[in-house]
Length: 402
Image (cartoon, rainbow, N blue to C red; front, side, top):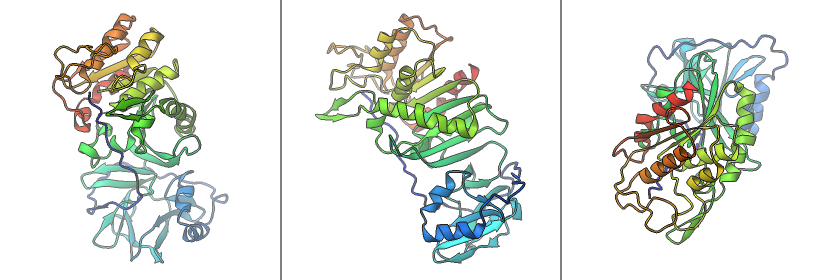
């Protein structure tokens, strides 16, 4: 039984150091503020951040950094030393920031495109920027970008479930569907574990991809029932997590970006398990649910709880389009211990046997191949982000075709 899932890489808001950017970071368009009389003064916000660095999070949750003020766009960098702001809007020449007591700031009128902070030798990204992307030099901060980009929202939630960062792939030409994915910190960042998924390289146009960061409690949040592994109990908060996605994250994203067209959910391993649980708990709310190498035998490893296979079997045919895949292999896919899960084949890997069992169960319920049931086997593929990145275009393509 494969239980490996990507480890959490929690945002620490520290700067990433990189090289000086090259030319051509992409098209951009300034977001003109019009009448700025209702906006705060830049000096007031600087005083607020100086008094309490925690104000960076508060101020990021509306527009995001840099913050529009009546004076222009306010950039703030929490760092000692002498720093300049350089970007496409000044040809990367750099303009000195006002720096004192660990806080640097500058106001720029209608900036657009890529930018970084530099002290002449280091070229660092803005860890609080709302918009960003990746280029040959790593992460690149953006401001007022209209083409395809990534956007992040810090500290979402925190009432019923731990607050976390959302990372959103925003298509430049607008979107007509929304896909919620789990383990968000591994989806876009090329420096994530095993190189990440590179979803931005595979996502079809028109798909708004929402990456929901994990908090390091994946075994708890991504599992629908508790299970026992080597004598210890894990998991069982999947209902709460599904409610959090449906009741907090989904309305938050709809409020910022709208929610046209089909809505789906996708993840890998335990993320695949919770995707199917989310779609099942909110039947009719998700047009698509995808599981890549899903841990679909969860509940029967050392316990006698219902697996996701059994829950879907009991529910009968529903309207959600299901995508299942795995790598690995299996020869007999036996259920020799009679627990209902075909996971007793010692040659099985990457949740191959459980995925095949789920596929066959759904087909027996009336799901039709290439219509509302899709299955892919990548023989021998490993259980890691590199393998998922290599075939994530398949479920993304299915979702885009709905």
